[in-house]
Length: 166
Length: 134
Image 1 (cartoon, rainbow over the protein chains, first blue to last red):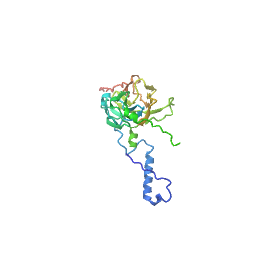
Image 2: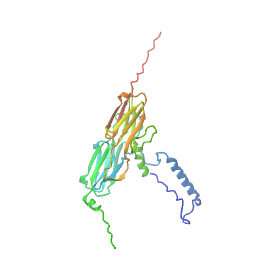
Image 3: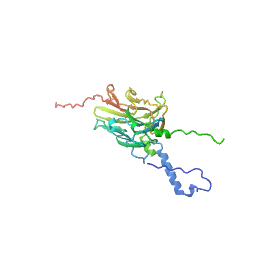
Image 4: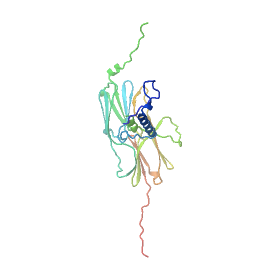
């Protein structure tokens, strides 16, 4: 994880902050940081980021009003290797993507796909009906639909605003 | 955190001047494994959302193109709360060498993974020639 330094503001209110020239070392450091950020910005790498080989599938969450729909990109898995569990306010997806290549001992020219086990837990924005959850794995995409509870639906009721004091 | 998510995100395909796209939407580069054995080269591509009817593999001269069409529309009443992956088609272009037997390339899709098996041409085995004393 990299922490990005917030660049100093170009304009400061008069008299509140000192000019960078008063801190020559700090200003040098900021300049060097900026130089590095600029240098690396053109490449698709970040030297201090977590290892890219970790399998961490991407998740989309959508809301249809009555239910939540979660889709996960999981290419090349068996449905029996995926484990989905849901509680009233969170959803956990576990699984293991196995390396199923039969060609052992071959030489690799490229190895971009990632394998391994993963666990992702996402908090759900509303209370859900755990019993009504359904999961479906098709074409390498896992989609889960979870209905909201009646209570959650009621709570999300729009409140009309009345005009008064006329 | 932002950097970590960046690593797992799909890479958007680089526009090439050679082909002009006729369909709107984004195109991503699928992650691939390429392995070479004694008699074949195997290409495996992760293309979630693609099945055997929506994937196209074409071989034009020595340019092998894999293209996967992802048909996904957000149902109208749905709104996205959280998005980590972009939705779009997959495309990747390779140049293959002359040692591949073009007639026997096989493609198979299962669970969003395309597997291409490209057998190599039969290369005449090296033969030792006995030298006789004359």
